[in-house]
Amino acid sequence: MRIKQAGKNIKYSTITYLLKLALQFAVRLVFVRSLPLEYLGINGLFTNLLAMLSLAELGVGTAIVYSLYKPLADKDTETIKALMRLFKKAYTCIGILIIGAGLCVVPWLDWFIKGSAVADIHWFYIIFLLNTSVSYFYSYKRNLLIADQKQYINSIYQSAGQISLAVLQIISLLIYPSYWLYIILMLLVTVSENYAVAKKADRVYPYLQEKNVQSLDREIKNTIVRNTKAMIAHKIGGMAVFSTANLILAKFVGLAAVGLYSNYYLVISAANSFAGQFFSSITAGIGNLIALESNKKKAEIFKVTEFMVAWQATIVGCGFFTLFNPLVELWLGKQFLFDDAIVTCLIINFYLMYMRMSVNAFKDASGLYWNDRYKPLAETVINLAASVYLTIHYGVIGVIWGGIISTLLTCFWVEPYVLFRNSIKIKLKDYFKDYFKYAAVTLLTSVVSKWLYTKLFTEVTIINFVLGVVLCLVVTNAVWVLVFRKREEMVYLRNIARDKFGMKFF
Image 1 (tube, rainbow, N blue to C red):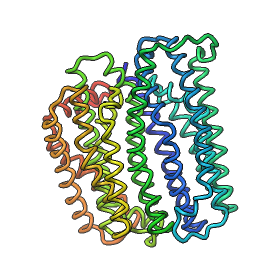
Image 2: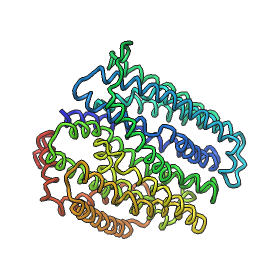
Image 3: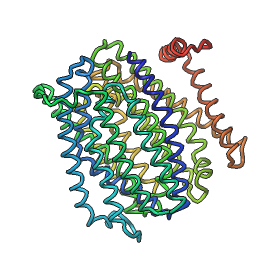
Image 4: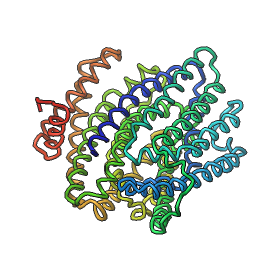
């Protein structure tokens, strides 16, 4: 049942995501050709600034979603209703708090920007603020769909909203290139999509409309409080790593640098979001696995998941190393390129982040928020100190190195240590032995693919780029299958492909 639901979730998520991604790239292309680069910097700056304000969420949502796994598996509707009532109260308060805190930032907005003369920037910020805060009044219901292994429903609604937004923004920029209209459309679509998902959840779970809701069990409530306390630190750490880069660049380098960085980050976040679609499709299944299966089964599935993540990271990392700048040049033009040193650091940081996904998915499904509560605090201090110092002295590359250093000193070893000590019975040394094998194959395929690409193609054209993609796919998959063909994880995946999809050649 878990495999069937995960397969359904992944199928819908992948189809809708690819269409949405293509339109996002089209929107960015039209945007940079219709509006000044500083407006692109504003997008990145406000996104990061409001992500910091979303710290007010404090991990309440994650803690409650974890508490939903067991009652959903047991079909305990009374507990589900009690949890969702708590969810609604918490998210309503959070939405109001974010609006209040966000308005307090308005007088200090100019401090975050080096040498900007963009008019109406304060009003632009208020629209971004409303776009962020209004989601909390409805979005708590989408988390029930996700926790119940119905991510595909959320994917359909979310992608429909984002695809509609992309089409409307492209049309508006082509007909009347106004940043005002661009962001007002964003707000309207966000409100509509969240409302539609909430109504769909009401139809899927009609008992949510019932007025008789029992009090939440004290033990469950204590677990949520404990996990929320732990998640405060995790939210701070996540904010420091993922939501400060554009702020630091805007303060010490300028909005133009934020605009260039955000183009590369859009590509990287597209790859991460694709993986996020995959993991959001299977996380509820992992939660079900953690709740019901034996230690041996949990370890087996973790190793398969880690193997799949490493395979994906190799394919994408190799593609980035070989084709990142050619992609940006074809997409936006040479004037938007970073030099190779910055791009290489971006790829290293991407690989380190991507390889954490399986560990974090199992750690979150196991509810181990409390066990590594000090890790994100250390990560925050290291990241901010390193990023600010290195950006002041070395520019854009400094903020990337800050992320790499903080990851290596904290998340890289703490997260698997916590998972294997408290939930999945795997030796840490065995995990790192596999990790470095996977990394070595990634490095090998990346170097070989780039060497072959530069030898075969001397010009950046669409045809050469497509052939480069084919080259990277052939090299990475051929080397991966050759090196790991006898591993248990490969045999497991081969059997699923053969039995599930009728791939007889396996």
